[in-house]
Length: 308
Image (cartoon, rainbow, N blue to C red):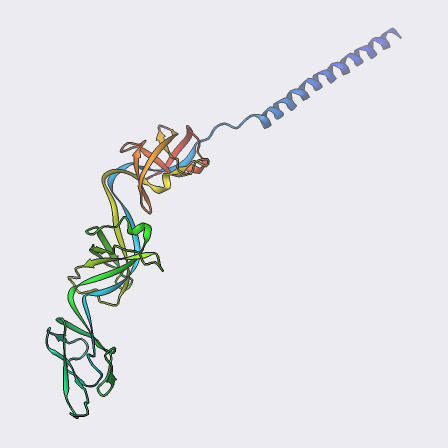
């Protein structure tokens, strides 16, 4: 009996020790898994593309649609009520100032036929003829259009705010949809001194030399005028610029410093479509993040995957 009691006691002790061991092991396993789930992940590098700060020229410009006109244009009107007898020149013909353009018949009662000669007011080409022989014209009827000069004028309707900053002699570039392979340089020749009350715009005239005669009156295009230009300015891609959410005018970039991207405030100058002038905060040669900046904060670890 004594022997059986001792065996039972031994069995109980073994079972109890086993339960204790299993409990300890279970707690450790659970604690290990819980810690693994709650432990913050190890920091990983963020892939980014970068571009260097370069020195170059940048411009502030304004662009307007434009109708093209000849250097000189003269609409020839009928001087009195009369009938057209004939035109001495056809459309496209060269004509000298003072030469007879049109012969008219005044058909006065006391003189059945009394011709009236209409002369060219300028030298150039007959661009358009408005009537046919035999048609009747009054003193308000245009007979033809004569254009002269090699240069081409672009007439722009410019809103009030932009008109104030445009000055004669400013540089301009003309783009024409029908001649996409070429841009034409020109100069602002005249800025109107008043604003049209109904449109709130003023007229600006820009002149282009047209040395190759590719431009023609009647064409349509767009004229870009250079308002301001900076040479040897620090320039970065506009895609590198980030604006503070709380202050939309405060800008910053991420600058590569070793394997980190450091946030740095910058001052901006002229902005183009794809480039920005930096007036403070960056030096030539420093690299700024252009792609991947949305995932960054100050001192984020990065890996450069593209260096433009």
